[in-house]
Length: 193
Image 1 (cartoon, rainbow, N blue to C red):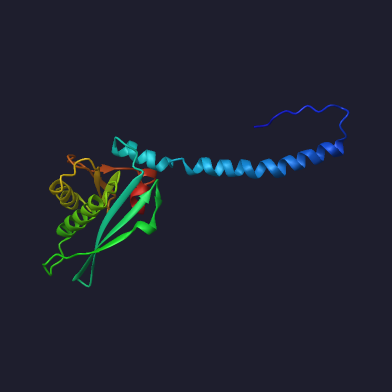
Image 2: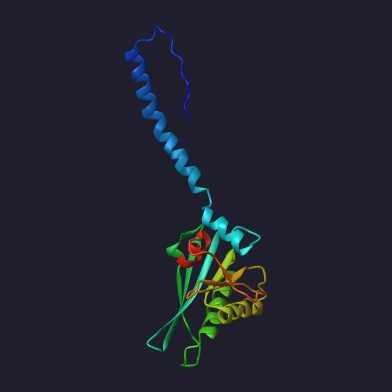
């Protein structure tokens, strides 16, 4: 924006310079603040790309990711990470100590347990479900998460599985994985989870 200002010849140049400096010092900070506030409400392009690539009905403002880790072959922990509008929300990360009775780690049962406990907790607290649930794993892990949601009667949460070795995205009802280009903005969002 380059406005044109016409000044009568009778205004001294020094006075005009002073007016411009005063205007710049008072208007510029307000303009920068307004620009920052406008950016805050904007959803990153990577989130809209994720909606397009996964063919989601709604924009995935809140994405939750579930991953299972086993320490020294016996202690299994489920991790829940949260992103809001493509930015990590570390204050909402959660860990779940797996209660499964079997001493042998079972990735599928662990995913089922973490998803069940998470969604039961959300329901009990009256909190909204995520716009997208991302499971770290392939078809088997995705099936375990879907079974947990089905047992709870939850049908309206989109769920995908991300097999990290080849970055394959598994979706319910799809026999073949979705493979996005490595430079894809939507794939980067899922990889951060």
